[in-house]
Every structure is written in structure tokens, then in C-alpha cells.
Image (cartoon, rainbow, N blue to C red; front, side, top):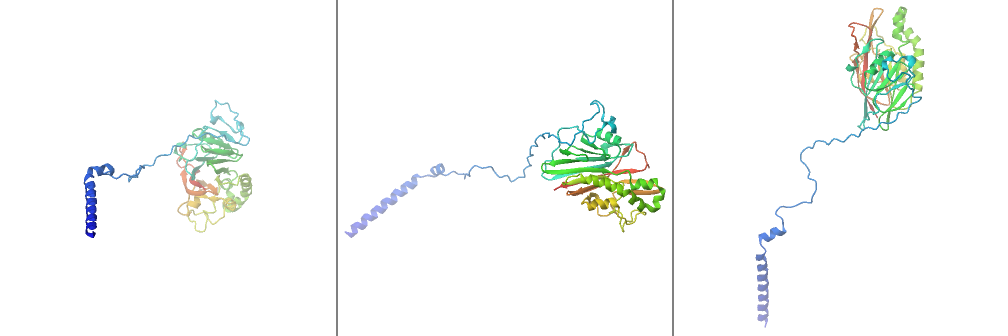
Amino acid sequence: MTFLRRLFGLLLLLSALLTFGTACMSYTYSDALKNIPAVPTLPEQTPISTHRQAPVPTPVPTPVPTPVPMQEAPEPILPKQASLVDLSAELITFPYYHQVTEHPVQLQSPIAVVSVLLVPLTEKELADVTLWPEASIIVLTGGLQPMLAAIQNLDMNAVLFAGGYAILTNLPIGTITTQSVVLEPIPGKPLQVAAVNLKDPSPLLSLQENPDYVANWQEAVQETHLLREKSMSALLEGLEDTPTLLAASLFEPSGLDWTASSSQSSYRTPFDWPMSEFLMEKGFVDSYRATHFSEETDGGNTWSGTIHGMDLSERVDFLYIKDIIPVETSVVEQVVEPAKPGSFPKQSGVFGYFLIP
């Protein structure tokens, strides 16, 4: 009986093995390909390139002109068909806004870097504006007619001020006051631009007109300083508490250039020139000297002339800054037409890049 049971179990096992083998023989390689792809597949997604892709430029939106609020915005009295150079001080209500474009240039970078050019103009000769470096802000100091001629040849909005200077820019203008403009190169980052032209009275003119002052020039400087400091104080008191650039034609050297180690000029002695000291006390930084540390190798002179037979070369034009960062500052040679070789005085401009934090 036991033998029969074992025989029956063996027959069942052989039957199961035969059935399984037959099934495996019927499932061929072709059948397998129908269910298992020969090439493995991945979920559909954007392929990752192994090559460096050229950056896709971000489309720049067309700037939308914004209204310029001004304090007592003056209207030109001159007929519209007349040329700008035909204006005179009697026909102008300062500040005078000369608009050539309603589409200001808005900086696209999140970091506001502006370029500024200060040009002290001669009294009569016309400047060749084609030789000036490109700048987003140009400040002119000097006589009215040379300024008007320069503005006429520049495709920039301009504001003329009663103090003998003009500010030109195509950056968005937020406010025009009686002595400055507040720009907004990037929304939320204002930049106040002011200027001063203290040619009369000046130490240089005092020395030139009074030979007796040459032997006692420090006294001449102190005599002219009180009136000059009063004018500068009135300007600074009217400014807003915001990042500021002050373009200044002071016609007075800087105390940072007249040091004990200064041997660039034989006539220099250590002297704290009062106007540069005054501006430093007010928190303003001399951008040229901040980016050129040696008065020996980087004089940066913007005025050269002869007074009573003595040749003088001094840095009397400045880009002072407050709460902004100087990146680079340089001197721009002033070229006038017609050129007069050997003529004095010679004047140069100051050009710089500045970061608005």
C-alpha cells in the first residue's frame, strides 16, 4: 500500500514537470520582445545638454515715460522756433528745464552704476563735445553761452541753474529743485546731483589780480574763504538726506594735495585749504583722491596757468560724493575750438564711475 502511494506521488511530480516544461518551450524570445522592449525607456523630460548654451537675452521692456514733478517748473519765454543758443540770462527763469526726450533710460542692472563727467568750460571758446567720454550724467560749469552751445550739441535733457552750472542726463528725473536734481537710475535708488561754481571770488583770481598777495597768499585765501563758505553752506542746507554727488569747480586746490611729502610743485607747502576741509567735515569724499592715493604720481590737475610769472598746475575741479562708492575717477583733457597752443589757462574735466548702494 505504501509502495502504491509513493508511485502515485512520483507520477504526479513527473506530470507537473512536463506541464511546466511545455509552457516554457512555447514562450519564445520573440514573445519576450513583445513585452520587454529591447531599448530601455525613461520618463519623458527635457534632455540635459552637455554643451554650454548661449544665454538667452532677456527682452528689455520699452521704457514708459514718467512725468517729472518740478518745483515751480519754469516755462521758456523764448519763442519755440528760436535756437537754444539765442537765450540770455534775461530770458531765462532758473532753473530752466530743456527737454529733448520724453523717454528716460532706466538702468536694467540691479546694481546702479552711473558715469559722471564734470566739464569746466572756458568763458569764450567753444568745447568740442564729440571728444567727451560718454556719461550718463554731465555737469557743466562756466559762462552761460558756452554752456548753451554745449547743450545744443548734446542729445540730453538739461537743467540750467542760476549759479553758473548745468546738469545734463537722460536718466529718469524725479525732482528738480532750485539747486539740484534727484535722479532715479533704478527704482528705489535715488541719486541727488548738485553742483557749485565758486569762480568769483576765488583765491586764484585774488592772487592774479593782487601781486602783493603772492608773498602773503595764505592771508588772501582766508579773506576770500568766508564768502565762499557761506555760499557752499547755503547749497548744502538745501540738499536732501540721500546719496549725493556734488560736482564742484572750486578754483581752489585741495589740502589732500598740499602735504609735507608733496614735491610735485616747488611752490607747494603743507596747507589745509579751507574749502576741502569744510567739505570733508560735512561728510563729503573727494572721489579722485579716494581712487588715486598719491599726489606725487597722480596729480589730477584740472587747471594750469601763469600768475605773475609763476607756472601753476592744480586740481581745482572735483567730484565729491556722499553715501555712494567711487569705482574709478580720471582726468579728461579739455579741448576747445579754435585750439590755441600755449594759451593759458588750460582746463580739464573729471570723469568717474560711481556705485549707488
